[in-house]
Image 1 (cartoon, rainbow, N blue to C red):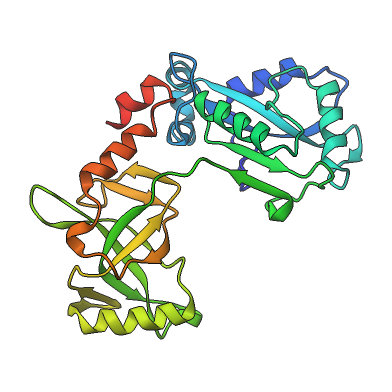
Image 2 (image 1 turned 135 degrees about the horizontal axis):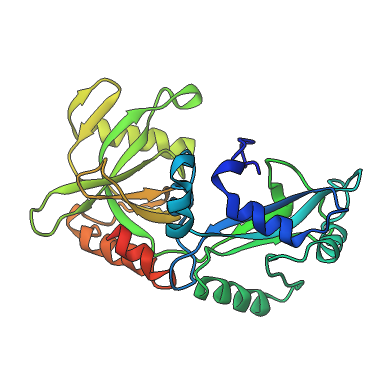
Length: 297
């Protein structure tokens, strides 16, 4: 068994090895692709952080098999009995997979109807999964790259209005701008602005230039490549997930944050609060295993 970065993780996942052996007949030689999901005591999925706890701890594997059992969801077949299938259309690979593998397959529908797909997405989330993978039925398999023929679909989380409290000089093409922004939410109890993440994504070159001028006007100090500024500029931020973080005083970190808009119309006092971030964080566990919330509270 290999990770997406081709690291051999077979010894860390003996339960997954067992599932594959049970799902294949002895006369089959193949390469499968799938996702191993950690399962809680209530049978619902756990966040990916639990999966990571299984790696690099082979000496504790007996204990981990009980604490963090894994279920493999197979979704593709790349090689079968001497034949490379990576250039075959996805629909043909899936049909073959359903014939040769008797284990757990990732559930699928074939549809171009938006309400049907929305309903399928809602069902996926309700079951505790992150979302869907949309694939063109005629698409080949491209290792390490999804491209435009495979797209990840997740439900959107509420955007946050956050304050820029510092910025770093960029690299390469962005070296002349302050383009990596430290984003902060307001702590209602102390009045402080606490950092919850950084991003350099979302702005155009013209906006980078404009933002750099504005930030230098409200500079209060600098250290290295970082310029500290007065908490005045508000930006609307999209993100994929909120995680607990020991690295930030706020206790939270945004994953894959990107700026959607610069909110020149808003003041820092109108920015979103740490309490709101905490509410969104807890809502993420609504459909996850109860074990996840107990661990990450």
